[in-house]
Image 1: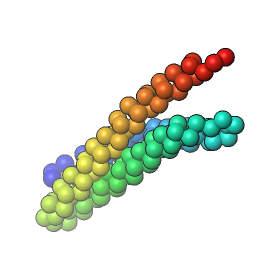
Image 2 (image 1 turned 90 degrees about the horizontal axis):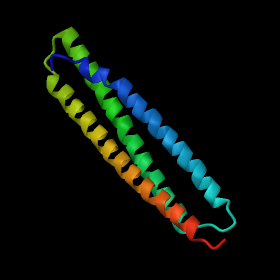
Image 3 (image 1 turned 90 degrees about the vertical axis):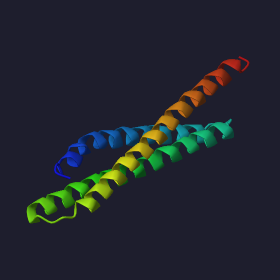
Image 4 (image 1 turned 60 degrees about the horizontal axis):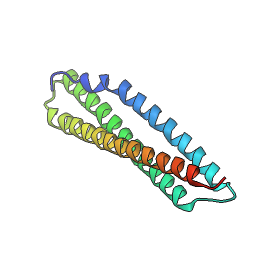
Length: 132
């Protein structure tokens, strides 16, 4: 791996994904809290929202592991460059782990987005079908 700095250049973008996902998680937690304190609770809706929160949490973990892997790749690459050691195989391994975790997080975020739209649609349909 000649360009060991490349994984480090990805970290700001990953940081933005972490920040965005954390904001989604906080908003969803507040929404769930509001539903829990309603007098006529829709337990099925609350369960679906909690499932969404779980997806976000798994995505965050994957983003964190991806970030750590990229940082470790940069560290290994930097140390090997400085000391002229031949440990590029482990740097490549951590780069692959980082990319895999980012892919996993992206898949969870895509799933979350699709489910969020369906849940919101069901909420709207339920609210308009209630007798006034």
